[in-house]
Amino acid sequence: MVTKYMDYRPGFAQSDHDDPLHGEVMEVNIGPQHPATHGVLRLGVDLDGETMEKVVPDLGFLHRGKEKACEGLGWAKFFPHTDRLDYVQPLINNIGYAIALEKLAKIEVPQRAQEIRVLLMEISRIAAHLIYLGTSSIDLGAITMFFNTFKERENIYSILDAYTGHRMNNTYVRIGGLYADVDENVEGMMREFLEQFSDRVDEFEKMLTGNRIWYDRNRNVGVLTADEARAWSLTGPNLRGTGVEWDIRKDEPYCGYETYDFDIPVGTVGDCYDRYMVRVEEMRQSCRIALQALDRLDQSKGKEFLAEDRRYILPPRSKVMDSMEELIHQFKIVTDLRLPKGEAYGAVEAAKGELGFYAVSDGTSVPARLHIRAPGLMNVQAIPLLAEGRLLSDIVAIIGSLDFVMGEVDR
Amino acid sequence: MTDENNEVAENATQTRVSELLSSLECTVTCAYDGMASVQCAPELIHAICAKLKTEGGFEGNTLVTAIDHGAGLEQRFEMVYQFLSMEHTQRVRVRAMTTGDDPEVDTITDLWPGTAFSERECFDLLGVRFAGHENLRRILMPEGFEHHPLRKDFPHIGIEPDKLYQKWDEERRSAFAEKEAGK
Image (cartoon, rainbow over all chains, first blue to last red; front, top):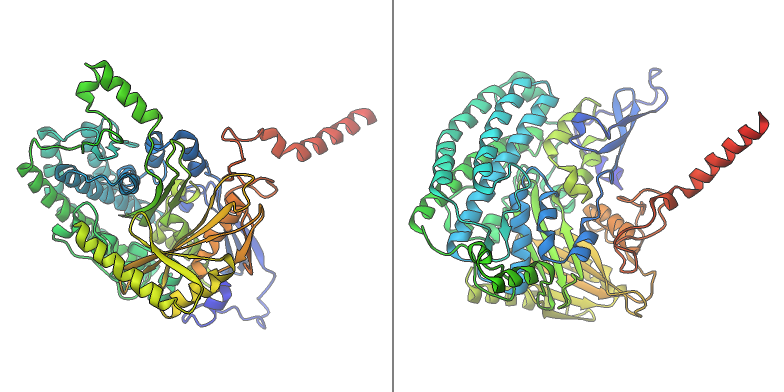
C-alpha cells in the first residue's frame, strides 16, 4: 500500500539493482529504547546499503488500556488518566476531555473559565513545541538548543507549579470549569514570562533557521503533499506545513477562540524544515493569544470559574470542607457521575494535531465507550511514507519533525 | 459559540449529506452532539464512504472505531466512522450496526490510506475484521494475544499475565527438565 504512494515521488534515492555493490537487504532494528525515537517506538528497517527500502513501525510498548480504564473508573475519575496521554501537554488533554463531557451534559462554561483555559492551553502548546524544538535539534547535533529550550520550559513548569501545585500531570480542569481561579501572583509570573518569550524565540531562530547544517538536514527531507497529508489523516503542524490552512481554533472554534486575534502559519513545501518553521511561528502566535487572554482576565476578576449544575459539577472546594451535604455531593459526583444518554465528539487543536474524545454514554455511571482520537498515531503512521527510499540518517530528522509522544500513540 | 448559528450550520450539513446519499439506503439524522449522522447497513459502509469522499468533499478521516453494546446481544458491535471536510468545515459520522460476535466489514483503506492503523487498532482491541485490509495484524497488544480487551466480556483487572506466556513457559520448563534428567 505504501509503495503505491512512493512510486511517483520525485527526488528519491533509487537503488540500482544492476550495481555490483548492491547486495543483500540488511534488517536493522531501531528502538524501542533509542532516544531518537522519542519514546518507546520500535522501527524495523530493511536497508539496502544506506537506503531504507522498508520501514515498519512497531507500537504498543506503552499500551496501558486507557479506553478500557475509563469504562472501569467512570467519567470523573478518568481526568488524571488524560494527563498521561500526551504527557508534555497535560492541560490540553484535560480540556479536550472536559469539552467532550460538557457537550454530553450540555453545560455552558463561564466566561472566565474559558479565558483561563485558553491561557493554559497556549502555555502548554508553547511547552510542547519547546520539547519538539529541543529534542529534534539535539537528535541532529544542535546540542545548545536543547539546553536553551529546556530552560524556557522550566520557567513554564514553575508557573504551572505555582498555579496548579504540580509541574506535570496537573489534572486541573473539571467538568464545567476549573479547580481553582488564578491569583495575581501567577498572573504576574505568566505576564513576565510571555513578555520576554518572543525574544527567546528570536534567539532560537538565530541558532537554527539560517544554520547551514540544520537547513541541509531538513530541507527537502520528508516531503508531504497536501493531498497526502489529508488522505493520511494528518492534522496540526504536519498538515499546515504542506500549506493547508486548517486549524480547529479558527475553523471550529471552542473556548471562544474566535474572539482572539491570531494568525495561522502555513508552509509551502511540506518538508521537515517547513514543519519546523510552522511550529516556531506557532509559539509566537500562542504567546500573542496568551497575552490577550491575560488582558481579559484583568477585566473578569472575581467572576465565576465553575458552572453551576449540581447534577454534573463538583461543589466548590471551600464549601466541601465545611458542610457534610457538600462532602456527600462531591463523593457522589466523583464516584457515580451519570451523564445523559447520548454521544459526543469533542476536539481540540493540540500541539500534535487534532485531539478528539468520542464519548458514548448509556445514561448509567459506567461509560459505554470512550475513544481517544490521538494525533500521534497518525503521525507515526506517516513515518514509512516519508522515510522509505531515503537514506538512514534522514529517519532521525523525519521522526523529530513529525512530533509524537508515545503515551498518546499507545494509550 | 451561539447555539442558533451552530444549529443552522449543522442542519446545513445534514441537508447536504442527505441529498448526497439519496440514492443509497440510509437515514441521515442529527446526533446528540449536533453532528450529522448517517445510519446504514454494514454492507453499505464502503459505498457510502466512497460517495462522501468523491462527491461530498470529505477528504479527511477522523476516526474509525466500534462500540461493543454488550456480550450476548444479537446486534453487538456498532461501527463508527467520522469524516471531516476542510473545504466546507463540516463533519459527518457514519454508524452501522453489525450482527454476531465476530463481525466483518469492508475496509476503507483504499479510500483513505490513513485509516490503516485505526482499523488495525479496532481489530486488535474489539475484534472487528476488515475485509480487504492488507495488513490486519495486532497493533497495540502483543502478537499471540488471544483476547480483544475492549470487549465488554474482557475483565477490567485483566487476565493472568502468566497465561499469555504459558506456552513459552512450558517449553522452557520441559527443556530444563530434560536437561536435568540427562545429568
